[in-house]
Length: 453
Picture 1 (cartoon, one colour):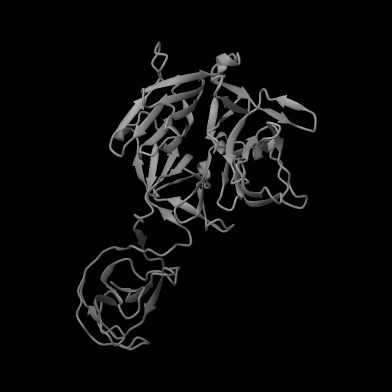
Picture 2 (cartoon, helix red, strand yellow):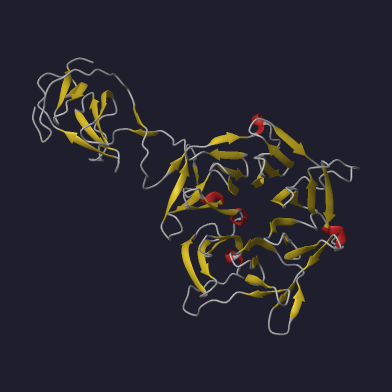
């Protein structure tokens, strides 16, 4: 038996039925393996809307059944207790934020609650009562932002953007300047997204007026400006309602809407389209989006039932990330609806979902990948029954694979392909089996052929 590797016989025995290889190189389309944290671990609701981490390492999780903190072992639940004024005012938690004193501010369906951890009690701000709104969830708040000046901003369901006044201990509506003279306070308007850029400018995504920023000199929000020949997106259209804003280290703004992903340069006014979804534009789950940056500088976008996009650094190049054992719905949508994602101080991802609780992903624990044979794939494994394995020392990144009936394969760990090595089969009822493989230091390998099963 001779080929470009030449040969010398040796003896190396192993018997495996399945080839499972652990590969550390970057895949073309990434699959991640997650740990599920749900009812059995102590949550009382699988519907997660917010996830943050405090400076002590505690994970705070907002659900449709109250607020939880998690220390990696146990959950502690905070809920509404009828008749107790200093309990959480509403169990439907939609957003959360930490102030400089590590107090937890909680956006909920009645307004905003502040958890004072020193006193172990809540101070509640019922916006429905303050603004005399009738009906359930009249004071609903979706998200909160504490800026670099320690000001608290709220994205609400009915009054768009609110700002907390520490002197009066109250929440106030912020005026919008729609033209040079028309200053208005919004009613029956919605905001989901809030962000602060590197120049300490506050940005929002208004359902009625699109992308806006806060002009400090006039204490008003005004519409963003776009360069004339940049992408034309109407952010006031229902399908383009802004759902999340993120500012990267270059001060570039990343924008998700109900139907797409965009980049915006506030200095030049350039708007770039990165991804447009043509399906399910009217589904309610389109509102759930989250943008995060990992410890390697990559941008991750958790995109409701549309899955996850991972951008290569802050470039425009991305790949779709799938979750192991995650099925599809209607051929396109994910079986898991993602809501809010958080990357903790150690680089671990915490994915909130609508019906699966928390999905925890540690990038340092990569999943095992399963390779099997496919007759139509010439670069694939020749046979799924494996008799011998040997990692090459002479050719780093190559693994010799002996099969039953498929001869010898050489696996390339960089591009994840198999090269099939031919040899003369003398007597093998399966058509060419390799039970043992050995390699010497002179770029030779030897085989122990299999005669019987």
